[in-house]
Length: 442
Image (tube, rainbow, N blue to C red; front, side, top):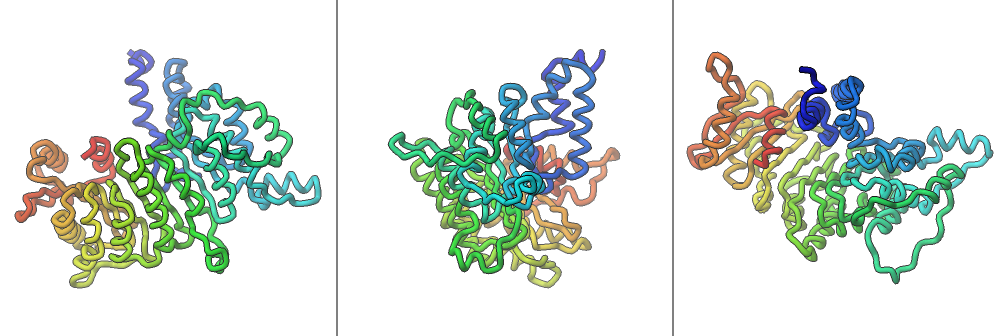
């Protein structure tokens, strides 16, 4: 019996085990890390073995695509009727519109002048691209302040508006070739507006702004997405990434206030949000977290990556209690199940005991918390699982079995024990364990 003799469902499961395109990590951005690239190459090789396997692999290969330049975008539009129907996630680098890009330099050297950017033509190009992908649910932009006009126009087009509103002026064409494709690209396969389909959105900074820009423009880092998040009823994963610069706390709070307005007028129960904040946060601390909770509380997962400009090593007496004190405002998040915090490093010589101490304290103040993670000195996140006594039989036993070696002995850094005050069990988790628990909804 060969691999091709297996049912299609089994082949698809094997293919997704090799490479899952929707497993997006901090490393999985415009350029994938080597491990992910190797997995993708393996999947491509698998798809070349026979036609049956190729049919199953094809949809997985095109589930997530990356658009670095306009040529890639035009290729997607051209193939909207073939492999474009498989695309569910897209990562777009808006530097493709910069006059400094290789493509623009090549075009304008022939003319002898540099053309200014046109937010009208750029937004039309992106609108056509997005509306050509009928299954698109996950959107990521690499953008900066120069892209705000383009994004504001784009999102205004993607959100349904009354027909009485005036249409924007006809866009200036990007070039004759792209103009031809835009004019002849039918917007078929669209069962509902994109803003109603969108489930996850990421705004990632591609270049820091000039040093005095914020003061001059009196603008917010994420101002271009306010209108979008307010009109996306199914959005349940949001990434705000200013890792190359910093984020003022009011910029983050302004976005969350828009989400609160969305939930206020929702026709059905709004989804619980997974929120990822990347990069240093001005005003970081318990006051910021109090404001965050006040602005928006329907959060089930919170990932705060590197909120400080430099790591803080928790090696002093009382340092762990200081960390817990900073995180106490999160006790007002009634649905919080996963919490990851960066910038705080726990020394490896007493890693297990210190993580156990922090996890115990947090679980007492945040009853809903199930998974807690903190960066270790190597830059990797150390995860801990938290289960109430009532779930120990269903979940804790399975994790306890996984923490035993073949001889029946306990593996190091796996089972931490039980908190006698609350009756909760604690286990050390690896990335694979975390993935399983999140998938199972625990």
